[in-house]
Amino acid sequence: KVQAYGVWLGGGLIMSILFWPALVYLYTEHLWFEDVGYANVFWKILKTRWGLFAKFALAAIGFMGVNLFVGDRLCPVSREFARWTRERTMRFYRGLLILSIFAAGLQSAPMMFLWDDFIRYENGVLTGITELVFQKDLSFYLFTLPVYRWVSVWLKVLLWVTILFVGLMYNFYHRRDPQTMAMVERRLVFHASIL
Figure (tube, rainbow, N blue to C red):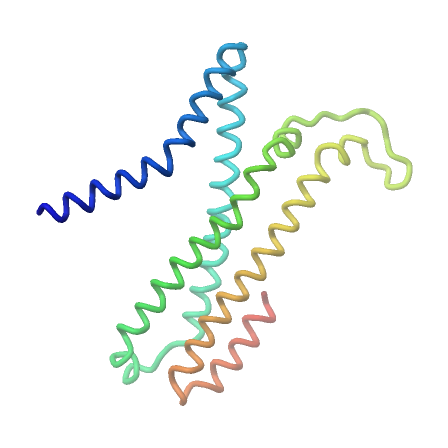
């Protein structure tokens, strides 16, 4: 019981050391914005940043999860073989789940720093000036195009990370059962072609 208390105390101490500077910074920023009369701007920026992180992280987890689920359904394991490898398979899936959540967080964190572009995109107005070459309103280049560029790069990174994780899963199935190697190879080609 004393050992468990020590673990909780040590964990709480480490968390406070890691998060205390961030909380102090946020509180100081809030006080400054409140003093100059822009507390609502501070909360809007904070809400937009964390909202972007949540949206992109959920999209990444969803996309990777669907592809991993499809890969799992495409490569069933025979019943005779499944009972011998159940524990190893569950360990592999737990590791893959933790890695995919971590990867989704890593991919979504940079999007938090683009809050200014996303706010301009949401609140953009037409300028009434038409650009001559593509016949688009000038507001497209000011408000919409920067967001499209960043989202396009993010989608490419998500696709490559998903291909990597799906490849790990198919490799796991390919090496596990010698009888199903040919089936796994065909289904990998099918799944990768769709991706």
